[in-house]
Each structure stands twice: as C-alpha cells, then as structure tokens.
Length: 453
Image 1 (cartoon, one colour):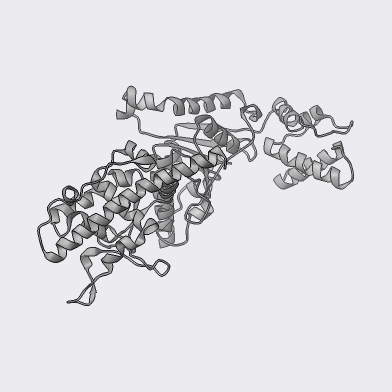
Image 2: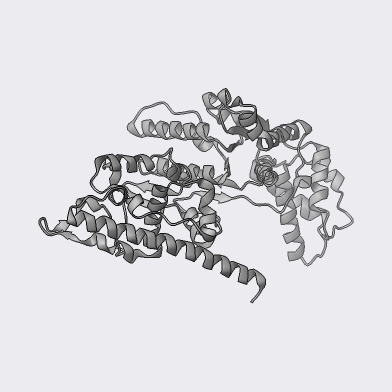
C-alpha cells in the first residue's frame, strides 16, 4: 500500500474516531433528555448535565476554526446521525399512548426510502430545551440564517410546505459539508436539476488569451479587486461605503473570449468558476427558481466561487410589460435574481452578445463593463498562429497571414475552422491541412453567422 493511501486511511480513521465521540455524546444527551422528560423531573441545562467532549482528531480540526458553541455542535451531530448512526434516533419513535400517535414535541419525519427517524428543528429544540420555552427560543435563534450553522451553510432547514411552523423544518447537513466532515475533503458538486451549474476548466493559459489592450487593462483591474479586496474592505474600512462583491458585464460577439477570460480569472484568483445554466435555473413551477437560485448562491458564498452567467440576456433582459399573472411572476423572478446578484459578496460575471439586451437599471450596478470586439487582423494572425503552432502539418498552399487579413472571424470561429479542416483533410486521406480545407471551414462558419460571401 502506498504512503498516500496509508495517509488517507489514517485520516479517515482519525475522522471516524472524532465522529464516534460526538455520536456517543448525542446518544447520552438523548437518553438523558427522554429519561427526565418521562419522569417529569427537573433537568437543568443539558449541556451542563451532559457536557460536550473536547473536539479531537481531524474532525475537531475541521470544526475548530469556526468556534461553534456546544449547542451548535450538538445540533450538527444530530443532523449527521441519520447518515452515520441512525439507530440512535429510534427512541424518538415511541408513541404517546394517551393519543395513540407520536409525541408532537419530538418532531421528526420519515420517508419512503429511509425508514429511520429524520430529525427536524423541533427535535433539536426538544433535545436542547425539553419543554422550556426560553430554551426553545434560544434554539430557534441558533438556527437563524445569521448564526454560524446557517451562515456557514453547515445546516439547511427545509420546510415541507409554506406557512409551516419554523421548527417543523427538517434538519439537513449540506451535501458539501457532509462530504467534508466524513471524508476530510470536499468534492466538486455535479450538475443536476437542483444544481444547474458546471465548473469551467481550460487547458489554455493567459498566453493563449488575445484581447485588445484596453480590454486586458479592464481584466487586470478585476484581478486587482480579487487580490486586494480584503485590504480595501477590511484594513482600509471602506466597507462602510462600498458594498461587498463585484459585478462585471462581458459583452460582444460570440467567440471573442468571454468564457475563456472568466475561466482564466478564476485560475489566477485560485477560485472555481461555475457557469450557470439559465434554462435549468428557470423552472416552470412557481417558487422553484428561487429555491434553486438560493441553493446555488449559498454554496457559492460558502466556497468562494466565481459565478458566470452566460447568455445572460435570456434572463436579465428588459422586464416585460405586465399583461398576465405569468408576466408578473416572470418579473418577480428577475427582480429576485437581480437582488441576489447585487447582494452576493463574491464575484459575478455576466456575459451577453448584446449589451442593449441587459436591463438598464441593473447595468448601472456593474462595477465594470468589458466589450469584447471581433479581433483585428494582427490579433487574428496571432490566433491562427497559436492554434496551428503544434505538430499539425500544413500544405504549402496555406498562407496564414492571408487568411488572417482577408477573413474577419472570431477566435472561437477560428477554432471551429481548424477542427473542420483537420477532419476534412484526414477524411480525404491527407496528412496535411490544405488551404481548400481551411477555406471550406471559413465558408461554413460564415454560413452559420449568416454572412456568407
């Protein structure tokens, strides 16, 4: 077994030891609470009667920087219990014999897939406070969005329906924290309908990005904010007047480098860039858009992601006149989305082919607007030279300079042209790309753009 595998195994065992310690504490706390509840005896502060063990091992190492209170630790391990030791919670299934139904004060849910007891915020309040009203109110305060468990995205509260009591919400550990707390490492979320975003990656570097000097200067300005924002907002205390976060609009024709620039900004800032799939984000079901969006922004804030809204005019365009309830709801969705973007303390980049499609009221809130034009002849020459600089063979009739100066195409189009020409050459038995192959590719791209000469 390699040293790397041994190290990972040792870390896992260390995490398991810490988790077992917390789960044993939870079991003692549940037993203590239920025993005194059914005996109708005074319990006092449960955290005094059943004190928290010291945080230990790698599990403790993961949580220690967040300085959680003992009560918050107990709520966290309560939410983790169904994943790790569900039988601890089985005692909550006891029925009230007087009413022949479960005890309301215990809370909890069940599901068709999981036959065990799923804790709710009501379960948390009972565990910490029993029936003491002051204690229950303190538990509710611990579960507010501004407190550590919710602010750090450790826990989510999921209400089964609207207008439910606050404590009826299920107590859920977020997926990325669950992964971290049980393995010691975070995983990158996969694209799905509940997470309509995909991480952007590229093998290209800054040397491959060819933009006009004014655009590169604006890009450097964005990088300056990402590098110095802590000093600007914290040490210089400009947060009193400057709102957190940074919003930038990239606009210009397709294939001019908007997506690549966003990806490379993330690489330089050592931050993951996620492209938002607007078609999946906007649901036909009322309320689902806000739910999906809230989940996405919460994860992005907790993990310092850069959010990239491609083809943003599809959602951020000028709001429609209100002629029906559907129009009113569409405008409501847009307003909610714009507000979340404006309140987001991180970096948001929106991309559009046409600046005119973006709502003017929102455009004024951008910190920077970058126009990505079609490349000039010299820039096109550099793009042609870069993409054809590898071991690919060109026939003698290929004049790259002539192609660059005679055909006004974007960098993305050049990539498509070379791909097409390479396939065409090989299909026709040639080991070299010929001028004819490239010209066919150019004409093909122009037909796509409706500008065939």
